[in-house]
Image (tube, rainbow, N blue to C red; front, side):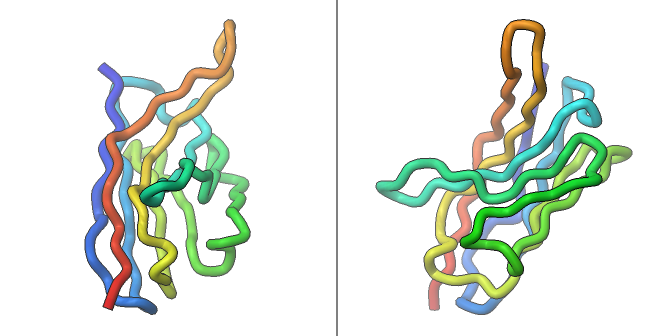
Length: 120
């Protein structure tokens, strides 16, 4: 049974930091590229950060570049998102995503999401 479980969300003041975790099980984690998405109320889900299967390459949306850091530990089947200098516009539900190329198209797994609220 495939599971992606996010944790670490919460309420933080502007300028503060949070570290999100995504624990994976039920599939070969090290074979999958991983992504963090977020969705704010009334907005579409957007890609925030990406990391390749071995962790050798990362990419970020312009809105978080320089503030967020994605990482993974394949020995622990876990991905992380370190979020610094948080802004109110970072408020959203953050989702963990695993993606690989399957024989008939991409294979996607999603977590349930964790709420991040940046407010004073």
